[in-house]
Amino acid sequence: MAHIAQAPATFAPFAAVRTLIASVQDMLQRRAVYNRVFNELSALNDRELADLGLSRADFHYIAADAAAKL
Image (cartoon, rainbow, N blue to C red; front, top):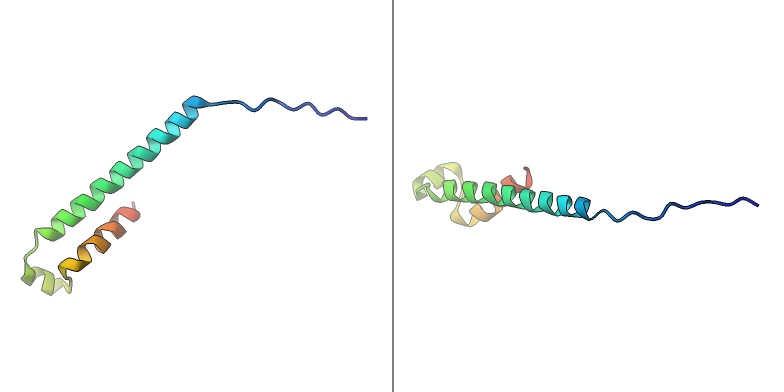
């Protein structure tokens, strides 16, 4: 009969904290990109937006897409 020794599961609190910090940093970077794109679009006047084929209703979707591509 064979005996299988199992190593106890290790608890890595520092790894969990590092993962949490990395997640927060990623979220903050994405939010910064979103805000920058949204603000740049908001600075355009209606004529410039019409030239680009955009409306102000598109700002959220464009900024969210830019942040998602990060």
